[in-house]
Length: 73
Image (cartoon, rainbow, N blue to C red):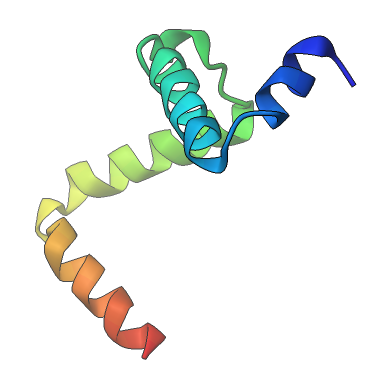
């Protein structure tokens, strides 16, 4: 186990969660540095084409979230 990992694991759960959040935010700050596979790029392109062809098929996030939450019950 690496020294950095040992240090991270010695933190409290709250501190580790904060560390995860800070690491994730640092990654998200530079989305261009996150490479996409060709399959992911193809899927994104397909979804863009689909949306351009029928933008009315899109659903607002609150509506989708509510539908998903109702399915969990």
